[in-house]
Length: 216
Image 1: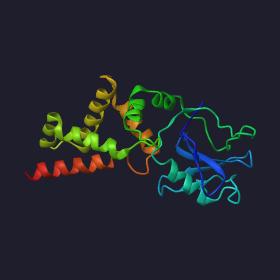
Image 2 (image 1 turned 120 degrees about the vertical axis):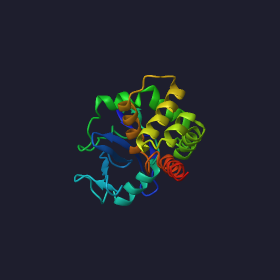
Image 3 (image 1 turned 30 degrees about the vertical axis):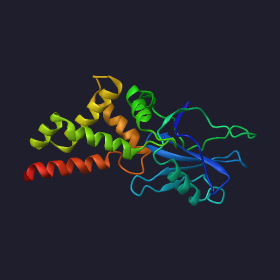
Image 4 (image 1 turned 180 degrees about the vertical axis):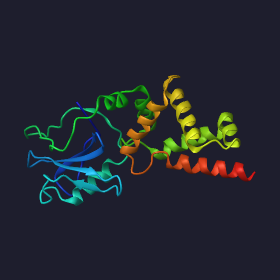
């Protein structure tokens, strides 16, 4: 079993693609129907652009295809999935640069908290709806007396966000024992398949709330 997103069909190639969890972040894998050799690219942390592996031929797997795959898989949550087999073809070999994920990554994608977020906020396309997630979290932040008191006392952004995430996850799962490390790992896992920071809108709203409280 590996950690990857659902398959998406490309228009730039007769191929399918998915994101796969690596030790240092997400990667893009493309599988053509006319060859057993897969194409692989990592994703630059600085630019967000796909970086094809040295053993991936750009004649077979052009950069345009990786960019399309990157866009189509944006927002798709990770889950534990087996190796991909294309109909009528031998089992596709994964590029050597792909690494086995760490055991703790399996624990995160299998956790009740991660699955609760995926189940609660995934849309009909199978993508995690960051707009819906942020709206829900922002609504809670505005209605919570605890958050209001923290804002009045000018608590840090990290403390506010962590409190909101903790309470929301406890509400979704009924788990009152979620640790800060578990929360951080879940957010990191969500961020890896997000086209942007998963809680960007929440962060913006918290900054506004803190600013207004300070002025008042």
